[in-house]
Length: 313
Image 1 (spheres, rainbow, N blue to C red):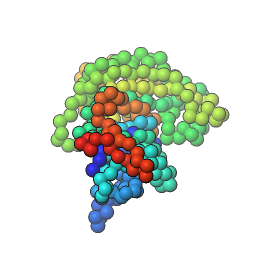
Image 2 (cartoon, rainbow, N blue to C red; image 1 turned 90 degrees about the horizontal axis):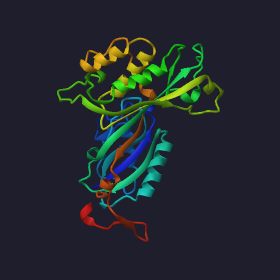
Image 3 (cartoon, rainbow, N blue to C red; image 1 turned 60 degrees about the horizontal axis):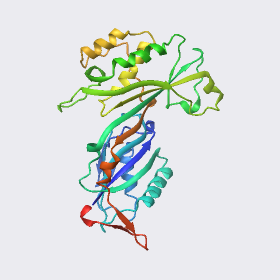
Image 4 (cartoon, rainbow, N blue to C red; image 1 turned 90 degrees about the vertical axis):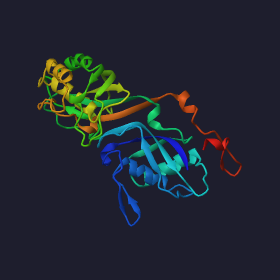
């Protein structure tokens, strides 16, 4: 069995989340509704065939409907020859499978690594981006077709953008974000104290600038970075900022929610921002540290991958 580091992107609105929900009937594993399930199924189409079902461990489990421009995982694949799959061919065949099956997933990188590599141990930070737009005329209801399920649209003449820009500083630093985490069912203890490295609001752009309808909106991005996030934390923070900009809450309300953390203290007048506006943009790790785990190989004349050190596999 060989372990591989994979980098991939996806549009989340097609799937029921990142994590696989296994349905097994007559020794056949069926899962076509999750990103993990689609990825694992794609790797079973490689030649030589897998003799065990591929197993993915993902670095970041995005919510249902959230998109990703770059997510990382490691996957264990075993074939009867115990051979390494050639990365260039793997990228071509797996992406062809996604295209033929109409999956909104693309494999970006495929790197053989040592068995001691674990993707979650090497993550330094994660960066999310939330796309939203503000109508220049509140009566405008024609959303550009390319922005449907890609951007959250605000119709208001009184939305205070400068106010929410100032309020971003309230969330920066190490805080107990219990109020901004959705409740998780289970007995596993959760550390709600997280360090938010940055939270900024920057000018954005339409996906299709030539669409005349795009000229009726101003586009903005909320960008936040941290080593790790709680369940729905980003969407709840964004929802609080939107409520502030709309005049539904005040800066004091946000301060109280942070200073008096509690699962039931998220104000009822705040709506969690929809998942379709959120993008996992980057998962950062140390490339020098990763290089210590990458399996070096050469390609023979008959296009066979030969590892240079068999002890690494």
